[in-house]
Image (cartoon, rainbow, N blue to C red):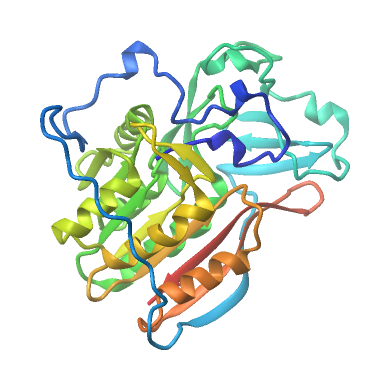
Length: 360
């Protein structure tokens, strides 16, 4: 499903043009070529795939999983990334060698650092032009290229100035990545991970480095291209990662019919999106069915299912109740709360998203 990713961090209204997602952005000509190992889950034009019947949902029988909430997962400033300061509708971040200023609608407080610290920024997202790529960024010191080298816990990847405000990584997700890597290592057996709406692939690379066999799915061919670049950058080209260009929901439905099963499922669906054939995705309408689908493609001895939700008008209690109901009878624990980034200047917590995860 193609999502409006630029709504994920800033709740302020945007012009329709600015609300184009990371998936709706047209790729430069040179990035449209798929690497040999990339798979596109499509069907020949003369062979129409039967449309599956609507998923029938019913409350599952069985004891509800144990619960742990609220759980606040925090990312602190580190050598790779730091939220330096925030306030007045913006945030000042350190991504590797660069200081970057971006909008942040939740930063309704005042800035703690003096103006001179903000003026040292290497890149500022303006969003005031119709240009794609780095054309919507201003570089006060000297022009910068589209990408730059970054690291996460020893994994090399590319930061990237995009026309939809993002920089190719969501650092608050590091808490989930570390948790997942621990589950994979502790399993002491082959583990299969499915990463739906996988974007630029940091979670997939973390899982592969930990020893898992990974299937990474995203509807954007451009995002898959970026993910493959990151795999090469990280020196993990020999790791078993399948890169699938496909609508995430349709792929999961197909895996259910095929009998394909996974030990860990990650899914980070958009609040709103459109599929490659014009399918409309609304989170509150589609999430119950997708969550049920994720349960149905688990192995007999699964490890975890992790749901992250951005820019939705709901409490984490809503997705917590959904996850507990969906995983009734499976034991384990449902943990729910928020992902936050701890600010370096004044120690304030910037909430980025809600999450709920079932852990066996």
